[in-house]
Image (tube, rainbow, N blue to C red; front, side, top):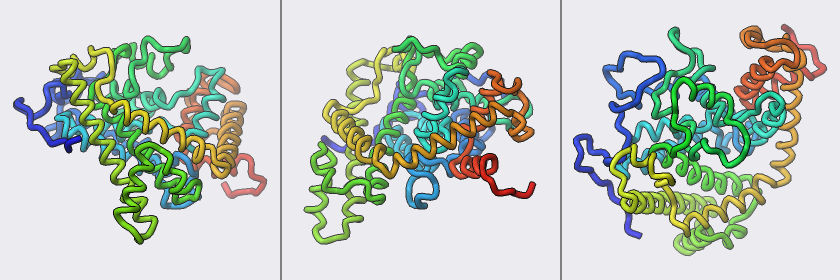
Amino acid sequence: MARPSVIIHDTPDGLAPYATRAFETRGRLHPEPESRTRTPLQRDRDRIIHSGAFRRLKHKTQVFVYHEGDYYRTRLTHSLEVAQIARSISRVLGLDEDLAESLALAHDLGHTCFGHAGEDALSACMKPFGGFDHNAHAIRLVTKLEARYAAFDGLNLTWETLEGIAKHNGPLLPRLSNEPLPEAISEYNAQHDLELSTYAGLEAQVAALSDDIAYNNHDIDDGLRAGLFTVEQLYALPLVGEVFREKEEQFPGIARERVVQEAIREMIGRMIENLIGETRRRCEMVGVASAADVRAAGRPLAAFTADMDMAMRALKAFLFQNMYRHYKVMRMVRKAHKVVRELFDAFVEEPRLLPDEWKRGTDGPGGMGTARVVSDYVAGMTDRFALVEHKRIFGLDIDPL
């Protein structure tokens, strides 16, 4: 496949016809004067970066809890890697880079402490109280919980950014199951219709696939460094095995760590080029001429080829079995479940254990309002804070007030 080149489109702003255009935004729920120095979508990106939820990603991990080592990725470093990939792809495709970057930076805001283990535990705890979903919680954070402005709750992001956060994995209506729409999304959608039955714009679709590229490759890196599997085990995988063998032949005698980095860099490049080529092909085949056409296409237009998609699936299956279900990781998963479950139960049974600023909105022990407040509080915890809070409540040592 030929390497993709940047195309300067024959439009006044140089963007592709199907790109989102910042000054054609559908606006914010709460009208505000426009910035004199930034587009509305650049402003959204900056608000996400300055949010408390974004800062907390520094101490939220995906597979390893924080004390396993400083080298391993956190939600923050992962989000930065996704943003870099999404921005690079968007530049070549002629999309709005700022929107793609915003969605990449925001895509993990709703995750709990302890990665997917924490989310699984909190979801189980919240099942009798309306459930917990990290995508819905991200919407709750940016529309309600972030308290930074006098005139409104949340960050008051544009329609395009909120649509991308809600729908970056595809339409939410009609849903494939009988589960109700998450409360945070349905509540906001009633005020500001995000058109939940359609696919989001191409920037959101690119950000979602950039997430796949980033975590698949950095999980290889982290898994090898942690000794959860070996390079030799990767040889049987399509694409991955081919690339690792090529790099070992290309650089004989160098340290294995450098071979790993060369291979990961090559795989990221191949995945990006594949995504760009297939996305261009689909856009041309469907004949999209605007961002509205992208939403009306009825199918995702940002995609990998069938061969690359198969290789990605094989890699995900390998990582699931050899990394996410490795006994060392499972031991931490068990601890994470225990910490989250016990914190949730303690706060719901006795809301007076909550800090003063979190008591507002509670409706007594075991109440629906109390459970939602506790869910928000626990979901916002970093790995380290959750462990400290658990020790404060359940530890037998007496700490000074």
